[in-house]
Length: 444
Image (cartoon, rainbow, N blue to C red; front, top):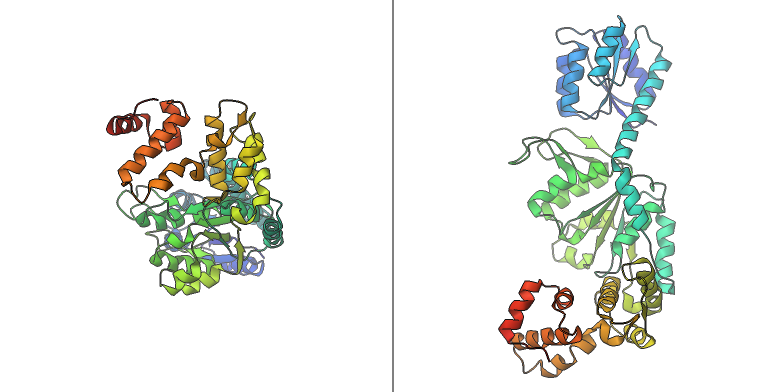
């Protein structure tokens, strides 16, 4: 079955009806009009992949309709039909954006082949727009882990990758939920299509609908042009909805409708658009609790939760820690250094609240602070070591005193290299100098 939506405009009623019936039998969605004016009304209400226009139409001709179509729906591929096929007419049509033209009387099989070529051209343009990002993401994608609990999730991921059903990925922050979303995409038949990620928490609520579904010019203040949404950018591929639990209730209604039909409207538009995407969602919240508390729609939750992947925290797969460390050291930013056995022992006995992401940051910090080719336990600045003094005093100290002790400890560990200390503390050097003055800290 063909999925392309066609618009046919011809003032010869019998020929128009014949062509519409033939293309509907071939599986196309077809709408038709006998005048350019009626065609423009359809273009304002519906989206079309391919349009077929007779050049000779009453009042407004096909060339003028072609020009207006390219303004209203610039991505639509347009075929021109003419009973007066002069080379000048063909050149004019091609100059203003026609994909191809056929001369009447035309062979219906030839027209169908031309429609197929136009459809392929449209898909190729869409694919080329996303190819650079696809290649970049594909090169960055890798999952590390061999523990039984982790291997089990990987195996389930492989089994469901080629399916079109929605997937819900649950797991704590830093466990690698986006990596599994990429695995679902790149291990599937959609691997050469777009992978588009949307972080519901990172986009202001008032802009999220526009980012997701797009908008038309004039839809709101600042909407100076038509904008394609991320749903359309993901057409044919995977739409990854990260931080699902942060999605506003009102937008959840529109997302549910999109999941059920594949149809949506850009903000400010009345025309229905349709795409084919596989939806993968991720959250670090307990969604059943969110539903029970009324923060998330129950029907949307069950629509997304067709298959659930639960990513285990790093503390439940500590046998993977050496593999992850080796990956960060050999493939990451800290090539050339190694961990001492004592440092590895401390990491394997550390409770990673931030999971794999925290491990990566600890290794990067250890590399920064290490004064030799070997990263030692003291270089890691693990909270169990770094806050040993604070833990003894926490019931007796004010928050200001605790901050002073922490900053002083970091400065001493890096031998008062203020640039390094600021990086470890994740503050600016200027702010660090201000804290040193505030707490009257001096180098020992």
